[in-house]
Image (cartoon, rainbow, N blue to C red):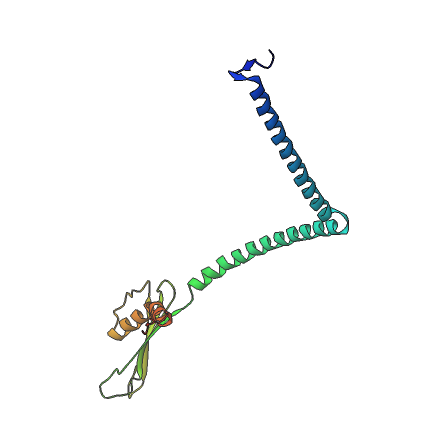
Length: 182
């Protein structure tokens, strides 16, 4: 009579078999977990025991100290970079030169206009005109690519060259096109 009883609408023998299979599966999983834990513990004790463990701890602490030094150094370098970047922005880094003949009776293009600009296109343009009587030099202030004094055509060309020097360098240094030969 006991075996003919039901639980949840299922015969008790089937419920007992299902429970036995679950207990067996859980036992196997427990044994595998214990073996894996023992393996990890052996590895841990090998690493952390004796001289090797102390060395590992020392290495880790040394690396943390080195990382702290690197952080301090990185902050210092970043601060210096900001300082120098501000100074470099005002330095002359764009140059444009146009040579020409100022007077019809001279040859050899001894006269020139030279534009010296910084990153903001601010600087000066020098115009030197060479004649038989002497050499005359004029300087004009350039602010953001513009001058408050009238510019000659050569001076405008020199400023234009200076302002586009980065584009010209990029064109010269860009990889050349390759052609497939079949």
